[in-house]
Amino acid sequence: MALHFELVTPEKLVLAQDVHMVVVPGAEGEFGVLEGHAPFMSTVKDGVLKVYDRDGAEPRLIPVEGGFAEVSEAGLTVLAEKAG
Image 1: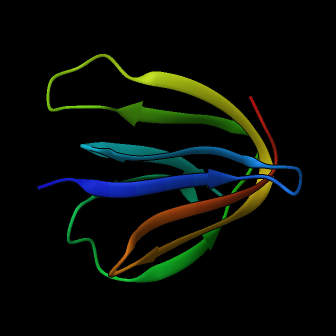
Image 2: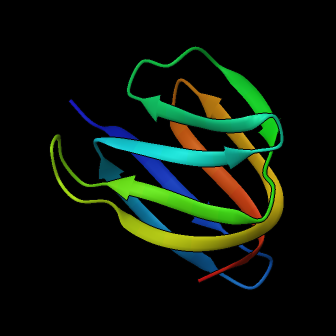
């Protein structure tokens, strides 16, 4: 099973795929999201998303600036002011 992850900016859908885990730079500190995570919302601070395609893989690093992250039954959506 995998976590469905979407990264969206006001201009475009940057990434939409199933991944193992994403680490998000939240306003209160970094948090990791795996499939089945409890639903919640958080603001995102300027930093780097770490996207792990599979367990044990090196993360892809995606710079982001501000926004919100929402974890739901559908997966993780990060709405960033800027990404990439």
